[in-house]
Length: 315
Ligand code: NAP
Image (cartoon, rainbow, N blue to C red; front, side, top):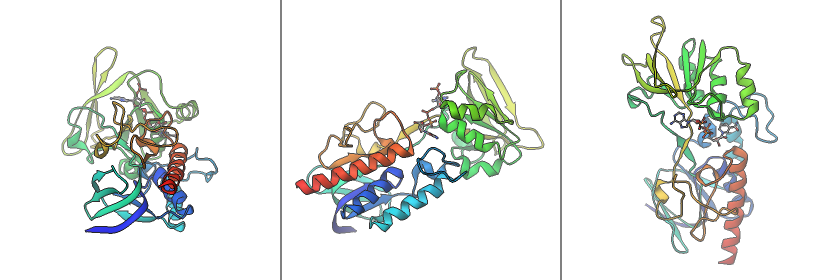
């Protein structure tokens, strides 16, 4: 059913970028609607511990807890929120249309904050064991692997931070990294090297996984020699945990052809978050940028909302 109201700003996605855009739009007395398909927070809602968001210094605070305050703050300033899955967009012209499963939404401007999702591990049989030993969310699933051996793929900030978090559940956690050097920032690396039950399988990738119903076998391939090594779950455990944190895929499929993107599907903006279409902005992990963090997503959201205000004032 069409909602006839024309909002000043439609905000697509309720991660840190979208919630900040909602807050800033609300403070500017723009009518704003945030459309989100799932829970607020995006990737950060699944992050066990945040320690680098300025001013947030509650020891051990989770991403979900930080994001709950962002949601509340955006609502306090009047940003409306709807849960819907967006299926189409029409972003040309003075009134933009966003189509969801539940209805259509109209706006004078649109801020795209749809973020990015975890990249699959890319090994044989991966799909068969998703949710049966393979996970992409340590906070969601870590406790299922209490007392078991856990493997984490990746060498960036996410892999190393989440591996450290998983050591509270696993008997032992092993980071599988394709090189012999981590990509994660030095402070996270230092913490990892001091964590007692955290080990490393260097120059390795997961070639295949297997199991009787649940994951109990991981085959590693050495990236230098090609040698395969089979890891079997202890028969008393019956299963292993395998977490993937090897980067992100932008959720930009819906906007292909509408706004300019780079070859990886990230939306190209200028430093004021303008996309190639007037009145359409992109903020947060979805856009081409050098640093994908909560702080930079929030900054993008704030800038985009202020640009939307300017655009509407000039109409
Ligand atoms: P990332 O920084 O892109 O790192 C991806 C890691 O996965 C790299 O170590 C990469 O190896 C490895 N990798 C990529 N493709 C692979 C493949 N096909 N097979 C095996 N390994 C593969 O991704 P991320 O750690 O998910 O982080 C994403 C963004 O969020 C980054 O901008 C990061 O800084 C940010 N983040 C920040 C924090 C924080 O500040 N606390 C926490 C989490 C995430 P190579 O190193 O060899 O390329």
